[in-house]
Every structure is written in C-alpha cells, then in structure tokens.
Length: 333
Image (cartoon, rainbow, N blue to C red; front, side, top):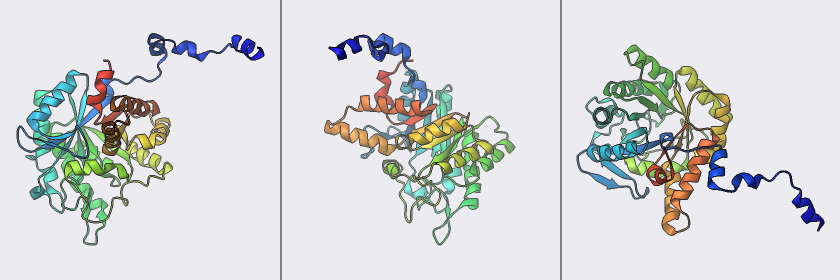
C-alpha cells in the first residue's frame, strides 16, 4: 500500500512524453533525413553492366549509365551527395598507379557526365592510389615494401587536380599520408580550383571492417598491411591530432572511419572542432547486418535506421552509407 501511495505521487513521469508518436516526434533530439546520407557507388567501365558484390548483398558495381539512373532515383528521394569509387581493370594497375591522374580515366569521365546530367547533385571522389596500384597500397612503395610518404604526395596532388578539372565538388583524400591535405589545397588553389572542397579522411583506422570494400574494388594487398599509415584502433588522442592538423592544413570537412565502433571518436571530435564531420558507415558494418538479416536474426531496415541515427547523435553531420536505399522509406524530407 505504501509503495502504491508513493508511486501515485510521482512528480517526474518521463513516460508522459512517450505516450504517442506525435508527442515523441515533438521532443525527438536527433533527426535523420535523406540529405544526411551520402551514397557510395562502385563504378565499372562499359555500358549496361552491373556486377553483384557477394560480400555486400544488394550492392553492385555499375557502369555509368546504370549508376546515373540509380543516382537520379536517390536524388529524387532527397539524397544530395554521392561518393565515387572506381573498379579498375587489372591491366591498368601499375606499381605507381599512374591511371589515377589520367584525365580520360573512368572517374573523371564519370564526374563530367554526372555533373551534366544531375548538376544539383554533390559529387565526392576519393583521392588515394589503392584502386590503381598493382600492390593494393594507398601510396608509392619502395623496393623493401615501405610506403613512401612524400613521394606519394605528388601523385595525390596530380590525382586531385585531375578530379577537380573534371568538376568534382569535393576531393576526399583517404590515403592517410602526412601532409596530404595541405599539399592538395596548395595545388588546387595554385591551379585556380579555389572552390573545390576537401573532405578529408582525417581519422581512418586500420580496421578489419574494410574487406568487402576491397572485394568491390578488386583491390587486395600483395604484401604487408596498412598499419604504418592508417591509425591504431586503440588510439583516440592521436585521432584528434590527425583531425586538427587536417583542419589547419585546409580541410573543409573531417571524416571518421569506420563509424559505429568509433562513436566515441566522433563525439570527441565534435567537442574539438567547429568543422562539419562526416562518418563512414563502412562495408563490413553493412555486410554484418545484411548477413544477420538474411538469416532472419535481425530486421535490416530497423537496425540500419537505429545505426545511422546513433552515428548522427554522436555528432556526425553526414554519413557515407550503403544502407541508404534500405532506410530511405523510413525518412521524410
């Protein structure tokens, strides 16, 4: 009786604000919208071609014509930006990745075509050598297998300049070489591309979650690993240093990758910078949920919505994700 009397006089009943969908929507602190999402596309040479990616159910490599069709459909649903990742024929891959700055290459041609067809769509293109190198690393390798930092910077600058000339909105250096943001910014500015933005993969961890992405690009390591340039997953203070140096060097947007296992890093970075923050919900994060969905263990739509909401709640302003087409029916714009 005493307990019932005490409960009857509760002052703070938080459930009052959860009574209905209408009330819950009024007090919702984090809102996920289509314009928060950036859809990554895997680009394939040719026309009317698509190739399923076994480790990423529902995701395909697409030729430009099919990519354009899908990009237009997503744009009509409120997605404002896409990322481009080329799947390059093995015959074009070399030790130094020279195809990366070929003005007639797959990615520059795609950028120009997409801009002509969908001028209001923001295009982001990676700056890194790994899709183009025969050894699968993001930089120039010495005979002993060391990834050479300063020698790689020249290649990255040439690549960024080629993408800017094609009309890209943001170049996105994902290589994690020291000083690359500053070098790219100076190169772009000196060539008149002062309006081309830099979305830097500022905090990119040496994660085990990238395997499906490497399958998608047919980019696998011939030797070693990427731990001498990508970050140790154990480190957060170092992550802040990486991001703030990129900001100092001229990055317009800072990225954390992967996202869900590093929500603490996103939240900490939000405290440290006023720059926009991107997060990459990576291929492994996508593949795990899809595998569980196919087994009937989880509902992919609901899990992806909750996942993306958590990434935004942690402090991300925008999210690269393969799950956009799955969650878009749940979003409004």
